[in-house]
Length: 566
Image 1 (cartoon, rainbow, N blue to C red):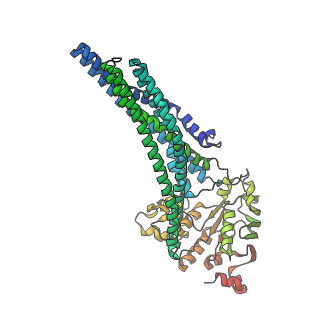
Image 2: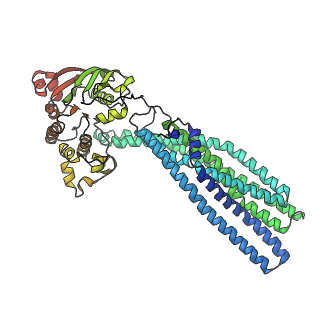
Image 3: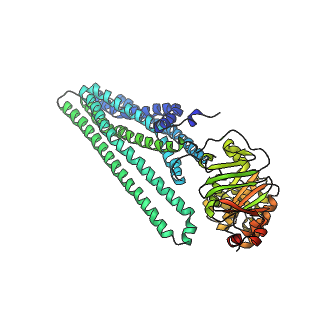
């Protein structure tokens, strides 16, 4: 059963309400404990004033002992309430941040892409930093209430000594918060812009790391670095702006709090001088004036943190409320594995039409690489069916009528730039952990030398993006993963561009053998793979212009010979 909290759209305010609602119990417990902490902290200067008052009157060791015992109880209460209060709140904060990280990641990993104009690096920033800052609202509210408790206790205690002192604290607190509430809006807007620019910088560097090898290959690394430097400089300037605004806010808050504390101390001194309050009440008032700066500081910072949490929640809403690019149907493909493309027009495709029957191994030689990439995107359902003309059928059913889960189970499109994840060779080949066809996939993809090279074998550790593998090893690992999935229909896009000719011949022979009886489509210009296919389709100018075996096309089609011969 789906949780309605994770299904309905949520703008930033709704996300914050959801976070608060899910943690009501922890927040109540945390508020009680932190309120007790603040009350005990406030009680300390009050107790000191009473001690001075009664000690001067009684001048007895018994009164002194009771006073010391009272202070010990207060100090113990302060220590334990803070410790357990923060433990409860931080556990709830961490758990809530985890929930939002998982939710954002789930949106990014759903089979149907969402219509959101964000790069992977920006989504990563939202799933980490923004999720953490949104969850901070769980600590902010209890700390805000507990600070209010401290101010209220101090105001009541001072009012009992003299009503003017209590009113001064109340009026001063309202004035301080009114000023800071206005300033906090600027912080929220500036922080949201900073987070967006930092996320764009993160996305840029992620793109550059992915393309580092080709950039070095054609000497574009310096221009790429300049592009990143400009994006990062924008982020730096906005960060400086945010730091400046935060500095003004913190300085203003500290100055206003100090003015209020000084006003309370001076007023108490004047009242004591006039004989309107006692020496003990003066000690209490001065102590509270000094102490009250801490809860006032915390209290005055809360609007800033609320605005930051709101800004982060708004950024999360960009992902969580984005609609899927397509609405999948309810049907499932018929068993068998037939793949049909009928008059598809998208990008470089200008009405491509062909059929791969069940169990057939077909290769497509695309004279324009862009056409092959567009065809792979359409078959992978990275392009919504309503976004192109024509029809794609899998197992006799149109893709638009199929559930995306059934398409993914039935049809696998392995891109030429398949990602390699941090983990091991085994977890990259078999992410689900079924382990049924790993050995056969390793042999077919010629990954056996990589496995044999390391003592750990398939448990050899792989770094993020396969940083400790060569380009050819990464490509063969990606191919092994695709073969191990054992899909009814497998589409491979340029699976051997980074391997040598001998290895390519062996891979072509092995893939044809392993996939015998299973529907396989390969988009490639590799002579070895083209020769291993049952038949070859020529994709030129976005349409299928020829169809035959590789050898017949070589013998009778001069354009084909020029395009694929090496």
